Image 1 (cartoon, one colour):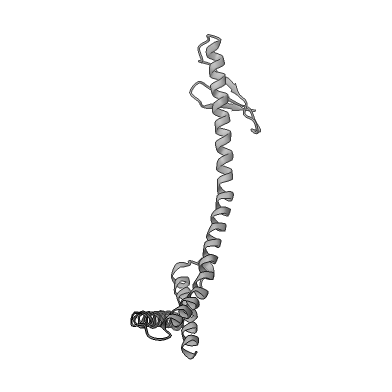
Image 2 (cartoon, helix red, strand yellow):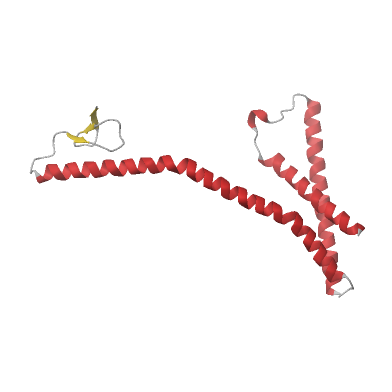
Length: 177
């Protein structure tokens, strides 16, 4: 019983230490980051980072050793090794699966929000450009159907546009109303 409690607490401690190592190395907090103002604070931050790293590596080795011992026990068919492996697997699943699903959910929500926030303006611009191209194409066909040379200016009206634009035959906007 005591080994299981120690193993469970070791898994929790490893996950906490790993998250601290990741958070220290991967997030740029900009103006909100704790900037050391003195050399003593710099040494303190360095010491805490080093301690977290050493504890993480030590705990990882301890868990690896436990898994190797469990594998050897199962290969030699020692009594109780099957239930022990199920208990350890359950403890690891209880520690890892919530974190996995939380990360999976947050990534999907983040991707959906970013897609909705940033693709809508581009979609609107794309629709407007397609309407402008259709208007230009229709006006050019109308001018060519009249048999006249498209050397002058012609008027383009786009829906949802606040103004009417006059475009010459080179495609440059001459005037807007």
